[in-house]
Image (cartoon, rainbow, N blue to C red; front, side, top):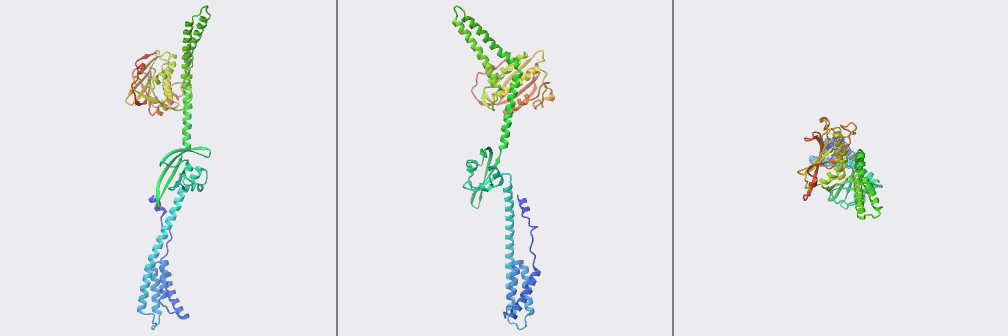
Length: 485
């Protein structure tokens, strides 16, 4: 700012007053002529008085040098032109008048310099005020200044546009009336209604003291468009995730139909048996009751399958909760098992004992595992022996999950781009499944990668998740070890 103010305060263009030597000389001559005229016409004989007046006038307007010039000219001509017997024009009187003129010249010069300095400072202050006023009023940043009573004392045009009224109308209003509440902290975010629309604002207050009074400068950032864009992006992502989940289930259509057909066929068979038992001459009520119980079990089994599918595919907001890792992986594997059965692959699930929970969005995590399992199924589809493995283990503060297969693997040239949108190694793939997986994992502040599985020899897709606070070890050994399906 110092350089900026130096440019604003530059005085090179300021017109300067001339030295006034010529005018001072003329003033001295005029003083002598006036004294002669006054003596001749009105009988006033004050030969040095008009010289003093000339010295005073030139001192006030042109400074000490001009005043001395006028004094020297006036006194010199007065002495030269005075008659020899003039009782007033004496050496003593001339010396007194000269001393008096010198004093006037020095005093007038100092007064002139002081006056010039005051005018210069006043001009600088006016220029700075105009600059600051222009910067404040025309700034696109929304700015208010409030006093110690939280009353608005200044507002720029941007503030007027935000509150949809002239900036002058904001003067005198309380800050609480504008933003809905007082300023309890120097930085905060809030949402208020303006003109029938919710505005998301970031408010920053800076304190300052001027002339013993306390003020606050309020800077308001309108984040409405950014917030709405983020909300729209989140909504679009949720819709995309929902479409991706529905697409994943669509790929398992025949397997889902087969999974539902088994309990429904059992229901039909048990119903036929129950009807046959009831039409007997002496029906066995206990047998009928057992058959009906078995029928209900199959109905509940089909209902659980539909519930899992509906819960997986429905549209929902991002919701992270603390859950057991083995439970989440188990539910995801049960969905992925439909695809595994379709190609008659051997599935190995290894879940090491985990003594802590994970804070995740359950459905989105299941979506990641299901997508990776479907990709593994596609990779082993053409293999004579099809093997897929899902492994979960804990290392320090992180949980790792990997899905591997014995397929052809991922070419090294694609490993750095395989998670980018619309990049796929499959002929019929559109390349959004792995991109969605990466987005979901990164939303949990972790990462996903791919390499070669050292055991199966095919591709391995692995991701990490942060572990939550420690809790008592649970019996997750039910999912640990090798489970071949």
